[in-house]
Image (tube, rainbow, N blue to C red; front, top):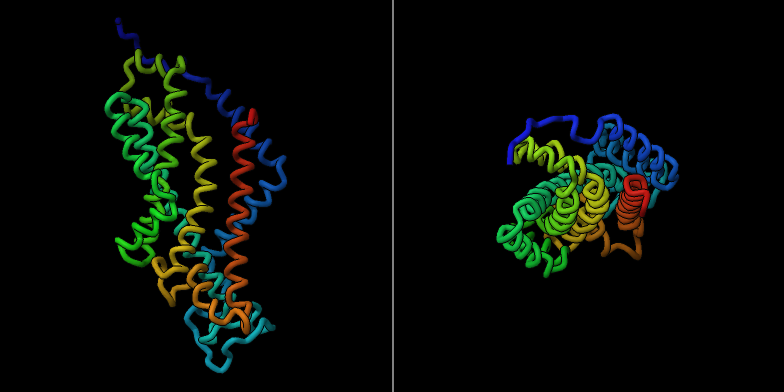
Length: 294
């Protein structure tokens, strides 16, 4: 077959892509719950970034004369069994939880996208081997896989992020593989290949931009799941270790005092619930905006 020059005009028009993006943004903004979720998430990120300015006390600052104090003007969320301010620890805990969510999703999404693209593009034995590995990983529930990896790697922030990230790889790999197989047969992809565009250029410029919609939706839900999984690992002692203020470990440390000091577990639990709900609302809004056909 005679190779024809690679022509950008054979690809979807830039103006059409921009128009689709504007239309998706309008659909997203018309969803009040999605906007609420986005606002809450932005506030959570800002809280994590400026935690040292927002928190009135250090997260390790102890006042043994004020142990198990209920919420009041000085300590709006009360204090724990070491006299530490719960509000300050929840604020600093947002930094840990948001970081775990972002990094673990980044690990799972990047590795999963590579695996899915390679499997769909090359097919044959490559597809078979990659998807066999993914199926093996899927044979274990995500939380169970994360617990196994965290137990093998040991407790700590870095290991928790790695364990949660690896446990989420199969979901992204399956989504990306299906999306690439749908997109690969499009005319503009075939035109780019016939025109002499190399594998990297086709993937980066033409495949990835057209499969981002389902990946973004999964990433928002995946971040919520990552925060819950990390909190679960910390709760059972395999994640973040005290005195680092992580919401799951705060709940674990306060469960012995639930009957006499409910605020120790209620406020970290409420923080998890609010952020996870916000991410789920954001994910639903992104799904409706990016795929209006449902």
